[in-house]
View 1 (cartoon, helix red, strand yellow):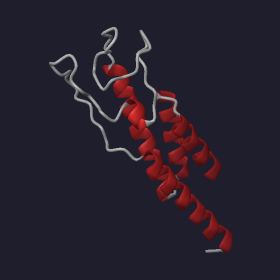
View 2 (tube, helix red, strand yellow; view 1 turned 180 degrees about the vertical axis):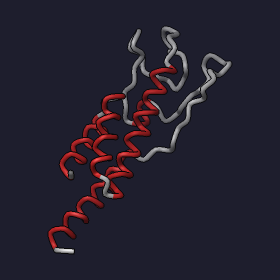
View 3 (cartoon, rainbow, N blue to C red; view 1 turned 60 degrees about the horizontal axis):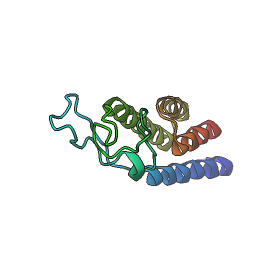
Length: 132
């Protein structure tokens, strides 16, 4: 391996590790069946804790980790599912960068940004495009 290639590979690994540590969260799953209690928690990792300011599309109240909006009662489960899906896509993109599959990483990052646009997701998309 030539010196420039070795340096580039080291940079890719360092950037991948850095991004992975920045956004590492435990994988949250959402039940396919809606929980019986109206305020049952779907995911404590959503919202501000995950670095994402999710808001109710009806009244703009912040997510409180509940399937129903705490202010207006709107069903937030579909939006929470999209948030989880976007996180999973970004996590897969980080892993693809880590393994050197930059084309796949870029496609995953673009799909994640199409699902939910975030600052970290955009940074990951730009990194994958730059490395490619």
